Image 1 (cartoon, rainbow, N blue to C red):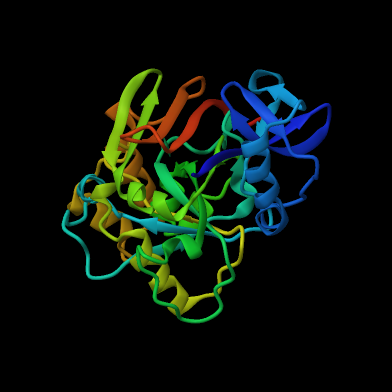
Image 2: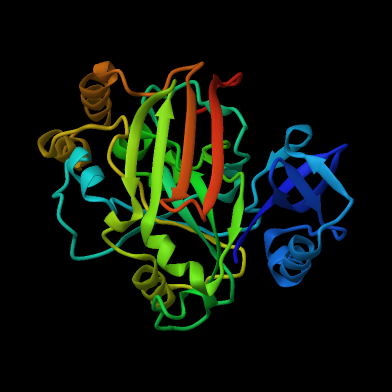
Length: 325
């Protein structure tokens, strides 16, 4: 049976623990990174879950940290749900190729951390996504299927791929537009997978609210490129290490809602940059969905049978205190 694990801070000490109701069963050993925990701590966590311990703390008495730690590759899938493709000005059908991009690991933050809006960003967007935690070194091409997926994916996390749309689209800089610090709320729980859990990956409910208004709601059965084929393709391209994160794309309901005609102008190399900026902002700013200072984003990912529960994120948007460009 899989189990929920957290990385937390109490009295300035960072530790790992197993979630048991509203308590955390603290591991005795301290693991510096997620890779260290996956290498040496999983067995301790499973034994702790089975045997219990007198050393526990309340979930309410700790600071929950991102279970994904630096250094880590963050590999992202783009436009992997039909509903999101349609609102992004793309054809809604499955494309002939998987879209990949990366995100800086310095964007990682906890499930209750404030999201800092850079001073120049007007089109701040949210994207709830399922994250796959790599559980073994991948340094050559491998064929990954649902039958052996558990050998490559150690666990699951929830991730909010916060995005500065005017940077991402007008500059064509996806890395920059998605990598500002705090643009990657992660957790709170790392769900360690068992082989029997793999079918549930295809039946997870994703829900995101902004100020208690449901904005995004989907099931991972709707993913256009599934985890096994995605990881197989990535293995043909690049190395992946234990503790790396692959996020699987977001569904419809984000703030971005653009026609293919406007998108074409924004992406066109023949249109001046200032004109692109004016066009995108004027087209998008009044749709009422982009994040504003003080907004609260709440996310949940759970299997329909309740067995897998990645917890709940609650993140408030705050303004940057320094000018960023």
